[in-house]
Length: 222
Image 1 (tube, rainbow, N blue to C red):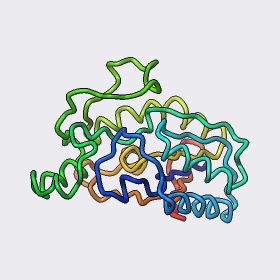
Image 2 (cartoon, one colour; image 1 turned 120 degrees about the horizontal axis):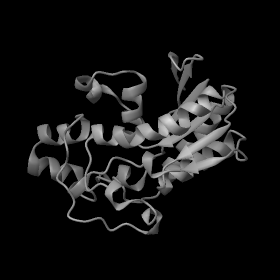
Image 3 (cartoon, rainbow, N blue to C red; image 1 turned 90 degrees about the horizontal axis):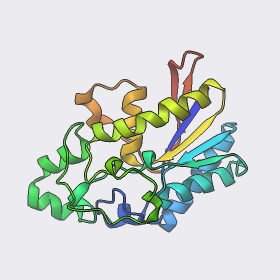
Image 4 (cartoon, one colour; image 1 turned 90 degrees about the vertical axis):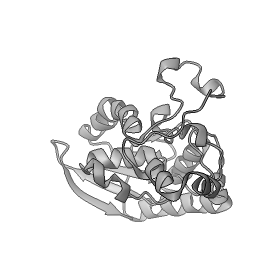
């Protein structure tokens, strides 16, 4: 029973160093190549993907689709879900990270970026498009801690990812730095005061192997 977690390839926001959150930014040329390399690694390790999950943001979607193409698994079912979106960084979204650090201090920025319960300054409003029209407005945040991100990711694990694994389907999850950090914190049972040590590099497949009781027995980084 294998779960493959992959953060999207380098995005325009990664390159330009600003807070992204739920902004729908594209991949860079480097990010596109990173996604293809991730697909080759998965194929070369003999992993046969049965189903794929992505966020509703194009940097995740494009990364997943390129991985599937290179891994010769473009035919498998793909599911897009807001639950895999990047953490909502509230009023920080769109702001340059270096300028925010100069204004608030590096210690505070580190808490916002790496802490478990630290919530960034909240956005006054969200200006999202129709991809969220069918979502209960009460579920759409104006800022999230990593803890809150975990709370929205967990129903996906319980309702879809875990059942797929129990059905022995190798599952690809192509998410974002913090939606995957939250999932890793749960899967590896990382203490909340150590979540700042969880690092999710761009387009680096992490393969989790489980037994029949969904107990983690191996983790491999490709």
